[in-house]
Amino acid sequence: MEISLSAPVTLTKGAIKELKRLMHEPGFDASKKLRVGVKGGGCSGMTYILCFDHMQEGDELFEIEGINCVMNKAHELYLYGMQVDWQDGLNNRGFTFSNPNASSTCGCGTSFAV
Image 1 (cartoon, rainbow, N blue to C red):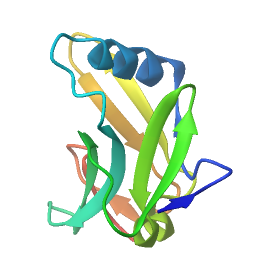
Image 2: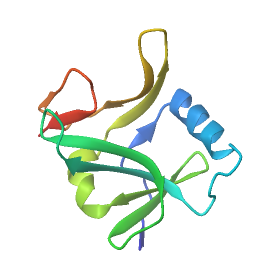
Image 3: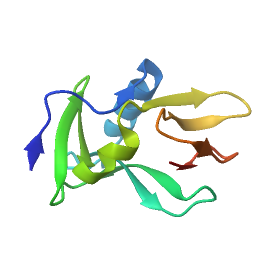
C-alpha cells in the first residue's frame, strides 16, 4: 500500500455530498474505501469504476474531504486530473466523469478511449 500526498482525481461538492450520504446509509461497510479506476470494455474501450471496495495489492490510498479513496497505481495514467461530479436532474441522475486524458467518450459518458 502506498499513500499519496495529493489526490490524482477531484470530487465536486455534489459528488462529495452524495458519497457521504451513501456512506451513512444503514449497513454500509465502513472498512471499504471509494475505489476510482478503469477496466477494459464499454463502447469506447475503457469503462470507469466508482464503487466502495477493500484495498488490494497495488492500490494507492488518498483522501478527499474525509472520504478515503483507493486507486490502482497503474490507473493513474488514465485518470490523473479527472473530476467526478454528481448530477441530480430530471434527465440525468448519477455520477459523471470529466477526464482530460480521454481522446473520445461514448454517449452514455461511462466509457472512454485514450
